[in-house]
Image (cartoon, rainbow, N blue to C red; front, top):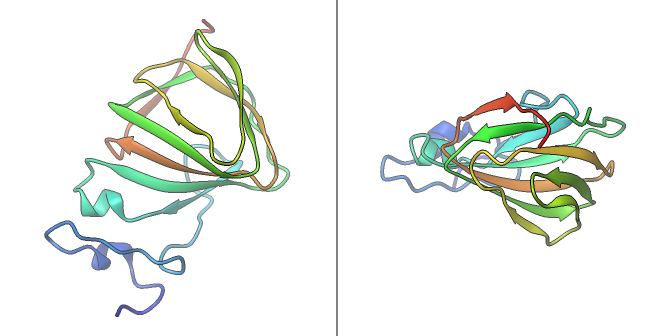
Length: 139
């Protein structure tokens, strides 16, 4: 059994097996958006960067500036665990996501976040773990 707060990288075995407990990785305010906090789930280390998985939660009081953008990914999925999010997607319009909602965001789809609740939280899985985000023209 591992001790709590052990570094995620040391918890990942060479064969890719990884277990990350709740106390193993804290939420950090460093990430793509300043109004979110991010918690690494250890998948990036376990897959040598091929896949990323993280929990993303709102920082209370923070809201997005709805800017159109796209991600250079092969795969991106989000699953809402708490609160709500409102997005606008190219060709699909506005979508409100409630707990239990799952979205596959196809590679390069233009989208923007319009808002979220202060208690909003989601799980994001991407392929690869690190990817570029670029601003995009409105559709």
